[in-house]
Length: 212
Figure 1 (spheres, rainbow, N blue to C red):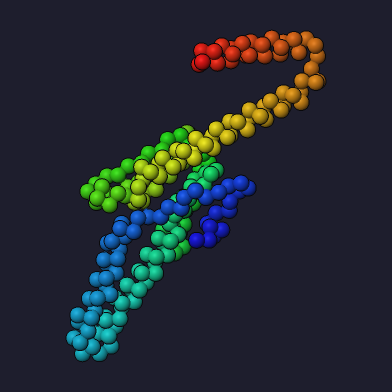
Figure 2 (figure 1 turned 45 degrees about the vertical axis):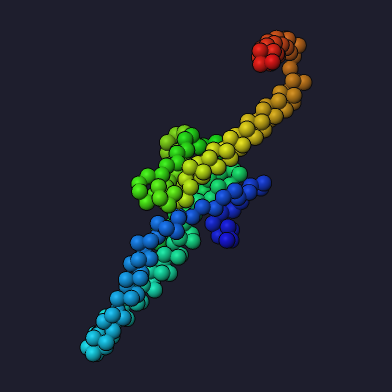
């Protein structure tokens, strides 16, 4: 699959999972196609005896079924949920000319829910994953996917990995800014900082001793 058609990866970003709708959930779509495609042949000889309108009634369901086949495959291939090392991307293709894209970075993710409901969902192990942001403005619902509980765990693991790296990088930036500014401070300010630093060191040392 050419992901460049769907998203542009950032520097250092890698794709972890590409998830599509479970094929079994398309059963009724394919069943309708089958009915439309097969039914005209049962009445073929009767329809052909009725000149142009009989031939039209024979051809129309076949053309419609071919159109539905193209649409089902087109929408299924482009309706995807992408998990990367940096974010979540939900591409919801609703038709030939209607597409919705939602993107959430891991620092925005607040809650992740995976669930399997119903007889068929339990039998074939498909369900949905819900991702909510902290401000509640964005909610991604990835429905009718295989193994939603495992997908939830994958998202959670990548979120934890991303956030630990994010916090580490943030701490490095703060320390670097302090080092850059400390040479510009006066003696009185340095004494104040020294007092704060000593207090912080003492607290961290006591925490480490308690853990040991």
